[in-house]
Image (cartoon, rainbow, N blue to C red; front, side, top):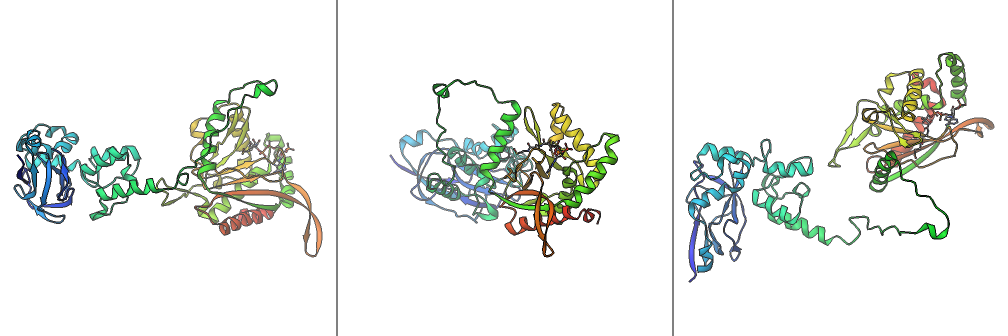
Length: 443
Ligand code: CAO
């Protein structure tokens, strides 16, 4: 026979007048034994109060914002004989209050009458600031950043649905994630038109090339596999735009040749790249957004106060990008020397992981090979990369007449989420002007 039963707040230690921050059920809901009914919050943290038995909620006696103590009425639940048999005892209900808590604080598990201290320490495990939380740490560990502010029941609910709480915007008090928020998140995800969220790329066809002629299968090198995966990720996930410009390096080349003669005896070869390294740092100082990265949330730009420049080096095993540190503090000869040593180490496979970390901006120079322009792929998490092609003599109209000038083609690819087209044009024009008059590097 059906029976109407009251569910009071069980023993929650010595806590009194605790805030009800969320009511997780409503009249008409079918609840299971141990299903969370409400979430309480002290000034330190949160805990769920479960139903001691299964049944149908007839009336909810409290609302979010109320204050409760042990014995305060939560709800009237109608139980049938069948569901009553599955009930949990009041003592185990008290333990169930700490069921989630117990997971976070083993000292609580099985304690019949929790003391304020044990409950408090266990509840701290759910502390919204997450400093000591293991349960909250579950989400932190998965997302690798930040903490979702949600009750244990909501965390469980989100876990069941495979929802990463970090991605859910909380609409509750203090940004707390509610059950509705999780449900709405799932609905929104399901409502996305197919293919709009992911890339929805059709699979590459598998072709038996041997049917057309003789072939040889050669495995990709380890470097090619690693850099290939990164290039692919960067290409599909960053909105690239490439801005082109030509720099008049006629005077720079004359000076470079002169320097090369002077330093030949020391075995130092000064290529245009050394000047480019110096000029790029100068431009980065003028345009700090190019010396930056988006943080993991995508909501903040991390501006770097150091200038470590990556240089793409072509090796027999594939492309590697060692980083020249503090390029702004070094002179052109020093940069040329380091560039020579670093590219030699790259080709001899002597670079360490540390040699390739910490870059702010990359230069990819194909000038020694040829070509007029190309669209380099941004080396994430950097936000821009400069491609350099081969310089050549051109007739340039200057001061009312054509003059033969040595022009260097530059290609600047930038992350359009961070950099606007106008800023990119200003950056590359500034860079070209600096190269055209390298006295500016001394300013
Ligand atoms: N225009 C005209 N000549 C150029 C030039 C340019 N933009 N850049 C270099 N040169 C000349 C050099 O002065 C040198 O001439 P000499 O032999 O007469 O002295 C010659 O080309 C060869 O230079 P280099 O390539 O050895 O030296 P570098 O400093 O220009 O470049 C390095 C060094 C390591 C960047 C380069 O060797 C390299 O590996 N480049 C490939 C990068 C790459 O693969 N990028 C593609 C990435 S995207 O897939």
